[in-house]
Length: 347
View 1: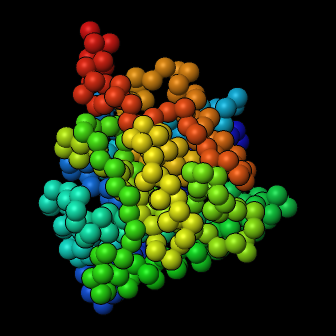
View 2: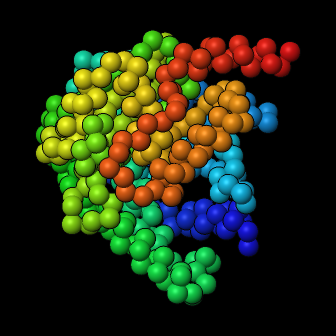
């Protein structure tokens, strides 16, 4: 079995251990099926950055790859718009009622409720994915990927342990968010919000575990399980004529607050680069427009894949802030400019 077949089988097997469970704390309120909910609004947000690939309206993500022999990640593989950012994490009632203010009304920069609900849903997606990972590895002996070798047993033990620690840390955040929702305390998170005119071809909904703050202060030591993790939350949204980024932090996570304060002190260009760096190094639920990917040179595509690989799959603990060579807010990446460039190339 080559690496592509192996990873294709991993994804297939993981789907067998999906969890369908409403993230909302009040299960007595749940109505309808657990639906395949979007962590980022489909109509008016994801739809903005979707475009045609092989005659299908598609998107790319940082979790769907074509694998190669020389480079583990050879290329991005398109997925359908309806698949992007989805998870079985809310019942029909809560998905519809709870998020109505951000689904059916324009984004309000000054609304604590809007900021909270976007961050709540981003956290819910990451929490749900982590539970599914633990479910997969806990049932490793039942799936076809386990060949009974010592390597497999060691991998299973390591992955179960890592996911259990991560979930224990995320449970603190979930409990806090549950209380905030129950008491309608929408001002219970700390934020930095950046909004820029123009539509940029990305969407992100994820919690993060940065190793260091922008200035290099230690945040999450991935090799010492005795040091509690801190998990700031990021949401990156294309929105009509502008792009919005919300970075949220729990008030009891002092290192996350430090990160927000440091980011808030940056000028716009440095902040844009810092946001890009955080996304590449920390966020698996990242949606990329084909307009962006197809207009990158092969060299730039390879560079982005390498940056992602080095900071996630092959990640080692570092005391230095990762600085990406990309800026997702580069004006050359604006969607209208990319559309014109694509049209000119197709003439």
